Length: 313
Ligand code: RIB
Ligand code: CA
Image (cartoon, rainbow, N blue to C red):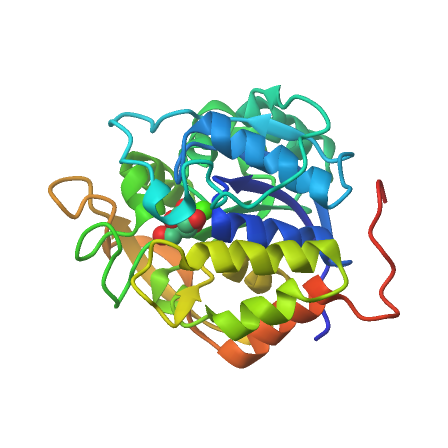
């Protein structure tokens, strides 16, 4: 399917599904990835940052910088890491090359610099983990934050059950105060909640189809999905949460997006849950699963006439 052009900063906590999302963006000719900024979430910051560099090395895109960000939420203690899902290394033990260079520090100031140097409203911020870095950008560099073209964030549960509590989802439950700051910033925000990401599911066959492809990024994505099945009690499929952010950015026609008015719960066992409120947000609530999965695999596997994306532009 035809993809829209996306110039993006990817804020991420890789993480198995983050890794697949990143590999898709790196393979897609529609994406210009300005950098990967990392945040603690699925696993600690050292591991998420290491994994970001290793994914760039795999995709032969070491021209793209990795910049480390927040090691903990704005105000509250971090949630337990999700090593039962993502493995103790964050990528399910899947072998990846070493990063080509050490990561930089200072993700938020780096984001602000990129936004200041780019024409206004040309850079998308794609958030795949807790919103700590994004909220800090809003607080520390408000005049740069408003230069974002679109903020697309995977997070929340609107009409479906959560994966941390009955109503809260991991990215938003990890830093509810960050969600509150981002909602209050009136940025052009689109949320991709569990309501839709749970509909985009990879099966063992889908993983095998990727794992036997010619392109290394596709093979590795297949291995990452197979690792995503570990630690699950015989599930038949796994939800591709973070790849849905990339798909919404590049192929929005795959999704049904609704305008909702939301706030975030900050107290009690459901803190981080999205509730009816005052902030207008675009929310992806429907998706064509078949076309979404086909788009993901077509881009990762690549067509014969799609040039290899080597170092640099
Ligand atoms: O709830 C799913 C989200 O939490 C995904 O982004 C996954 O990578 C974890 O960060
Ligand atoms: Ca993530």
